[in-house]
Image 1 (cartoon, rainbow, N blue to C red):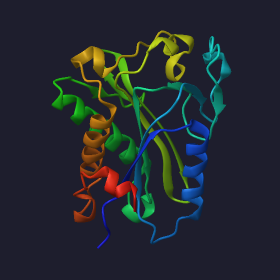
Image 2 (image 1 turned 45 degrees about the vertical axis):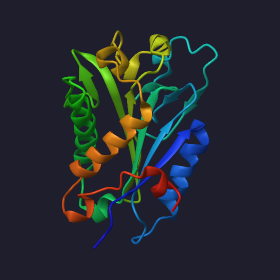
Image 3 (image 1 turned 90 degrees about the vertical axis):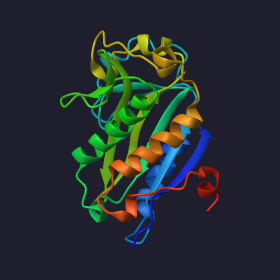
Length: 221
């Protein structure tokens, strides 16, 4: 029986080396490689999806811009934002990309509900929203039947840089964060909870039904 995904807590890590590490992991994995979920914060950076239009990058200023290989348009990452990278063998799990998107959305929605925040997903615009404002963004890449990139949840980050872009390609789209909605500001606590919910949402069988809560122990294996 396969084991649950290993959950790795990476702390504050530079964007580009983390992206390259995800690519290497995906290219080097085989049918016996254990799935992983990476939890990380990044220093300030704007990222553009493969087919993103630079017209949505309004005024980046001194924040770096990185063109990457996920889907979607432009988004912002910074300290105080939880980024969740599911490195999963979708073929082995018999999971479609839409199912993974919904699992990510539902995991974040479930965590928000624990905090008393009513959040929803949108079929035509992946992500998680509260009263029309975007709380979490999703952008994935599938290669060799496996996923990387993932979702970003605004916990306590500075929202000002979002005013420098058309968020996810939508002019005037508002963004929000848990710190303003319910006072939650602990990115590590959010990571533990969202990872647990994600494993449960992925659960097509007992191999994905449980996860260690000792994330530091997992990350040392």
